[in-house]
Length: 243
Image (cartoon, rainbow, N blue to C red; front, side, top):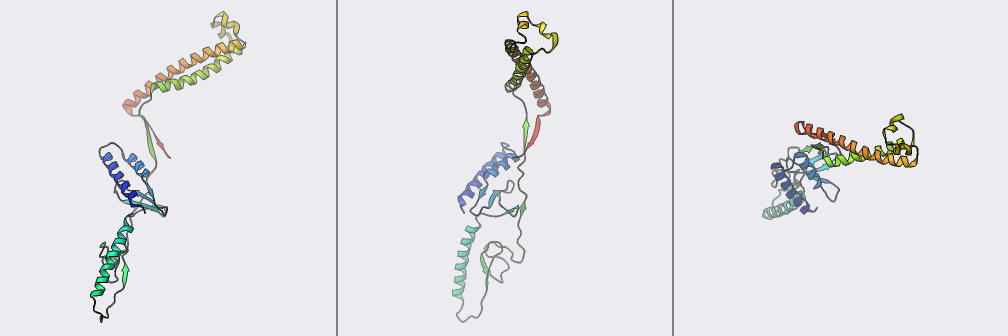
């Protein structure tokens, strides 16, 4: 297991914690960034730092459990020290001594210890108490999207483009087919004579496109102003998003 990855993740967690304390990021952003530094070890086990506790957790059996990535390294050091202690004690035992003691491993840190010992000499865990594991619920991936305001220029081009398309279709239909009755007489005679022809369809399509763009753009200005005014005083629309 590459311990350097875990140390780098812990350093990144400290940076995020400081940013959260300063108010630069909120709790949801903190959780999202912690997911980005999640580590997968050689056995395919997921490791993640708890946002509130700062401790490491592994995802096994469909739940998160507290664990330590440095346990194997510490256990090896503890075993070496324990073996050396046992060898010294054995050398100090008189050759004619008949007393023998079985060696067992600690329930918590797996260090070697005498079978009669109630407490581990390395981690101090009580061997007569059951091992407790802390479980945490998986982090919620649901986030919230807040629309505080709408920019005017993109809205003008969006609705204007929609109006352009509608205007072209309506103008071409009006210029080629006999619809809306006597409305054609509201136009100059030159345009009246082109109705029913391809030329009339093109001319009225161009006029309809320009009129549609201007009308829909004007509507977008009104709607944007109304939304931004309401959002300024009462807050914008909020949407929940899922990945």
